[in-house]
Image (cartoon, rainbow, N blue to C red; front, side, top):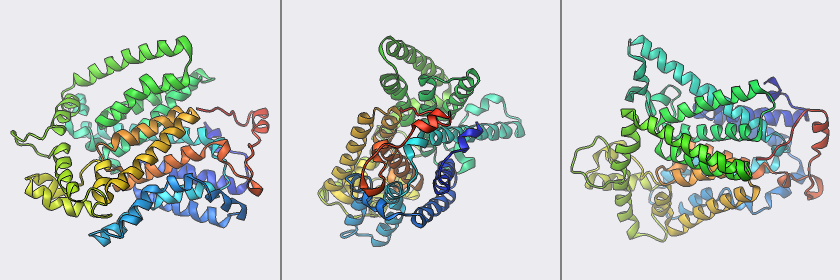
Length: 440
């Protein structure tokens, strides 16, 4: 496995590679680390910048990928909360920064794509393993039965609590890591030991996703395993066999999960509550649909332009109180829907820009026939119905890094001197067994 961290390239590109390794490895942890590494990567790229690379900034993707930041900037002009708007600017800077860095940096992302994704998958696996060990140490310390691992104290946010990350945002990362390993297994692993290792890592990641109990991510995983992966990774009879086997395994896993009370409550009871606006029975928290309805009333007054960047929480706080959504009022929650959030802050035009950006990503992923990229876009599209992805640092980093990474990790996107597009020389490293080039 040590070959993962050994590459044959220029000194500058090696440093760039290790920056990306550290950045991807830092994503599950405190935002301080990822921000420091991003700053360092930015300085490194600028120090070694070559004038010819500036031509790469003149492309459609440099307008589309950072579009959500542009919406934030424009909607600041008429905002009702200027300080919060500028805070939103700083939060979304990575959305612009990553496309610029990947355009200006000379590192060939296509060449190292698989290595970087595998390192990310292994870091996520190690993190879940650590959290499981931490949970069992706690169980042993308090002399609890082993099945307490399936109790409320060790699931969802309580499971990811030791690394201080929101359960759903950690689930984003785990599903990408898991699907990446499944892609590798489906493409064929040369060593039986390596195949066993990847299988064990996949099971650990699946356990992590189950413990985190994110309904939207579990839904994405079902689509990925039963539709996306067989469509892009298999052909003919193998595809049909895998789909049937996948559906059978998915049914067995779902049945086992729902047989455990805490998961049945998370996946069934809480789902019903989330889509219910009926408050006949008292609840500790407000449902998402109740927050959506409150936000919708605000949107009716200014549907075209919205209320400006940074206005959401301030606007909704009093509305939540008036609607007797006291939990949402006390915690200062947002509407928990990225589409409604764009409507509220930037109106129809802002939402349209976001939808066009997602459409661009879907089109690019399908064109590249990249199953992992398709799964990433499914995560963004589906989870945008239940979370404000772009209003949390971990969500912004996940969105901006992987969106740009998948777009730029293509041989046709690598620009060389004189602004011409030419393929990289992959023959030498393959001939020396230094690198095997495989596309998803």
